[in-house]
Amino acid sequence: MKKLSDRVAVVTGAAGGIGRATSVALAKEGCHLALCDVNAAGLDETAALAREHGRTVTTHIVDVSNKERMRAFAEEVVAQHGGVNILVNNAGVTVAAPFENHSLEDFEWIVGINLWGVIYGCKFFLPYLQKADEAHIVNLSSLFGLLGVPSQTSYCATKFAVHGFSEALWVELRDQGIGVTSVHPGGVRTDIAKSARTTSSAQKSLAIDIIERFSVTPEHCAKLIVSAIKKNKMKQMVTRETHMIFAAKRLAPQLPQRVMVGGYRRTKKLEAGNGK
Image (cartoon, rainbow, N blue to C red; front, side):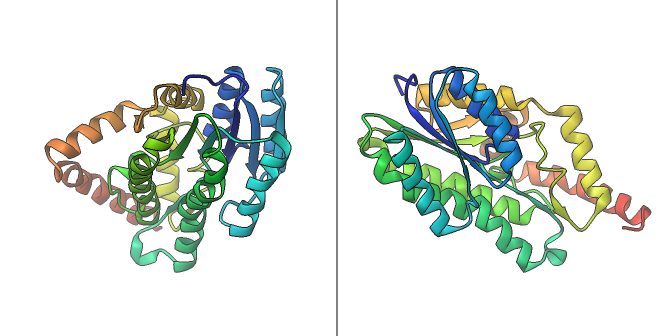
């Protein structure tokens, strides 16, 4: 996009983490914001931070997995802001469990938020994006949308789907003046690991420790998201590991999976030692 000032941006999952940081970053660029989440208190905090930059900000309590609520959300945004230029489908959750222990109910829950939330966002906001003189869609995929990771089958399923969905949309919407970017963060200091559904406390603790030690800040991720919108990039890798995995998968597709086998075996031993 050539211009961000006075554009209207929609951000889902805006109550914290990448969603909050991206909302504030867009406000700094001059965007007016429509923010949604299920966390009302966190949403209000994000809105207050964005309003410090003199932008118009509306908040909306939305479960992105609810089709009719997402349809109504798009209508609300246009009624209050007059149009839409940027859509950031950020809302996401995770489940950490081996597939054999992974409940179908948890699978349905994560697919509803991580995949259907993105599809609903694109479907219901697209008619309004098509009316704008320029527009952009950002869909949050993941490092796990590039790499299949054990105990993350449902998360990988949704993030690979978002990646492929975004690539297809990029082609379809290119001649309509609507850019599409899939974002692949890797380790970012958010609460997604802390709030993960899991069958193993040891595995959850390990994931939290790794994220806290080796991750980047949400603000760093937000900066790259804004840059991707400006440059109309099809993909945006965020962390060093996403760049490395993206390259490795092209050069030696099976190598990352073979490396992970050893790590997965060690994790299983750790869980067995803790009796979990």
